[in-house]
Amino acid sequence: MSVILITGGVRSGKSRIGEERAAEADKVVYVATGMVTDAEMRERITRHQNQRPSHWRTLEAPESLLGTIRHFAAEETVLLDSLTTWVSNRLVTVPEEKMRDQGVTDAVLGELGTWLEQMKARQQRVIVITDEVGYGGIAMSRLGRWFQDVLGEANQLVASAADEVVAVMSGIPVRIKG
Image (cartoon, rainbow, N blue to C red; front, side, top):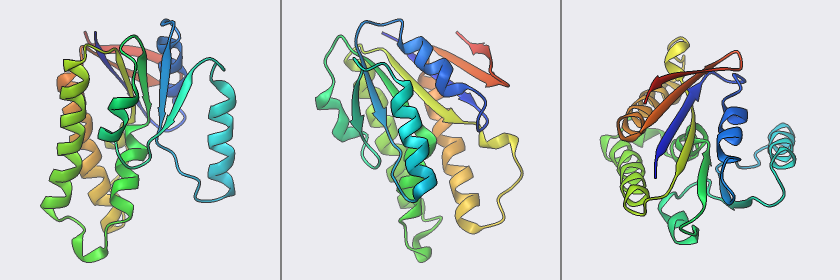
């Protein structure tokens, strides 16, 4: 059992690297967090679906990670793509007056932490794909800054639980932990 975190910038190749690592296993369940919000997002999701091997199972989980656990077989490698989108999905629906509410932040990070604990207890191989938002500038909107803060904390939470952390830059994976 291991937890592998693969991080990098947008279009860095991190999903490809994660899929290559997952393909080392016989059975894979792909936990997809994307939601169709417009035509361009539909194209992205379709492109990702078409890239995956047909024998991989896909589990749609745009909002709840904890709800996914009961659907995993013990022998499956779990590929979560992506933590970034899951955090975004959780925050974008929060009313403006609740933005930056510590209770909301704690709920998101708490669910992620509980999911990681349960996955480790199951002795399941888990690959988590995320974006490293710390490489960019400070977001200009309140929601954007909150998202950067929460995702940064989420990434640190997964990295601390991970056996291996890989940063991907320009399609090149660099092991930074493990």
